[in-house]
Length: 337
Image: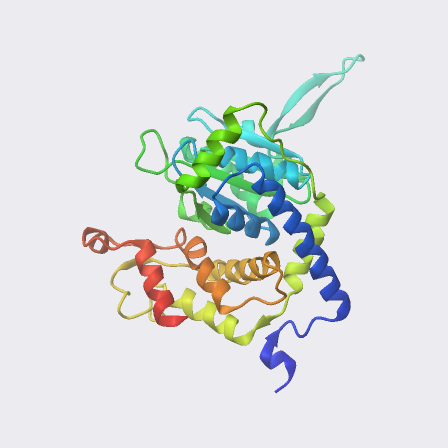
């Protein structure tokens, strides 16, 4: 067998290994800097860093008060990114996000339109409580998230590089929210569920934030270093077994003939090819974050929930029987991985 039969991407050379080691060391410092401000939530921090390393967008879901906003602020500072925050409300308009044109009059009386950029023109955009805005406003992020540019009055405006959206969302059972449509959910590389911290972490947070001055995050990375690390992630080799595991897992979660026959009647719609792409990038990013230069089956298993849970839905009968998306994904992982 040739190396390409065994490994997608081939075997990294010495220069590639050196770049990967440098990127891993950089993000070890980033992780440490975040840990000095965000207590507990280790898995949430890891999945968020995986999202950024993979060059994607993340959706953080959790009840208020779990430090989601503080996490995004800390990430922006630690990574040296120009970051902005939008508080989504029912009366927010698309122009409040992407910007708008204003009519200006020069001294000579000549009038012209000038585009005033909105907060989407940032390297890291926090869309806070995104499901409180109307569907029309939510859709204003679609082009920006996917194409990395916006169009206003027929003119194209490129967004900064890098560009990432980290959106927070309240649980859908709360009042005054609008569920995100499937098309927009699929734009998020990972859905990151933020739970309550354990007792020790909550005690540490309580003491650190109520006595004296709070610890402030420090910049330990630059946007250029982030983009270099993202380039390294895309060059990491992936074993054939990992590729096959990703394909089997994604295809088994679909309600068509390629899906798991025992679950086909429970799934309303399943993940598309973008889920496979998310798996490949996220698995590489997780491996690099842990100082490894190729992903493993364990990376696929660890990322199955955040990659798949927002890309599939159960039908009414399955929900009535108490079946959950998380339970279905766990069942698929046990049977495939």
